[in-house]
Amino acid sequence: MSATPASSASSSPSSAAANPTWFCLRAAGRREHVAALNLAQRAQVEAFAPRIRVRRERRAGGVDTVTEPLFPGYIFARFSHPAQTRHVVSTTGVLGLVNFGGLPPPVPDTTITQLRQHAEPPAAAPVAPIFNEGDWVRVAGGCFRGTEGKVREVPAGCQRVSLLLSLLGHEVEVSLPAEQLLLSRVNGPVTAGRRSTGHEG
Image (cartoon, rainbow, N blue to C red):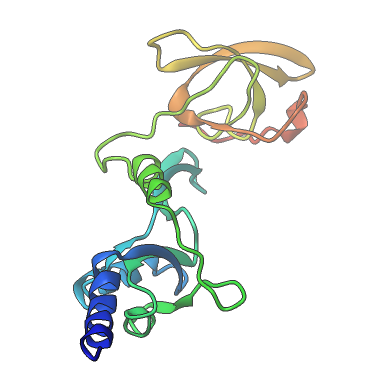
């Protein structure tokens, strides 16, 4: 009879350690990748800080590709709860375990797999702008910088996009490099008054 409790007690931690689960953690803002690295190196826990590469307009004109957290202030870690929880949340950069009503919801492995596929493009892979006919875009470089217009045509295999811009009260078709364009939230025609001039690219 005494052997049963002993066997049960020794198998529970082993079972938990053998079946770690993904959980969401709160991390210090702008240091999500550091928290994930600390978990991996110091706590020996698999961690994942999803990051994406996005195109942003430079203040001086043009477009840069930057890497940003997909979920600012949050990361994922795979560990046994509650056995490893205290060790995990005490890791530098980790602020706590996300929970609801005191219970941390597990994150399915399939979710992490999908995030890895879509949130971690190869560092050398360029972030190619994708536009469709009818999209409204903003010109981020060149002499038309600051002007917004509608995509008229995107020739297959071509790095330029045909746009319809409203200039001086007239609708003018121009062809510009796709790398100078950013998607806009504008839903209608823009007058020439919103155009910034004096910038060459």
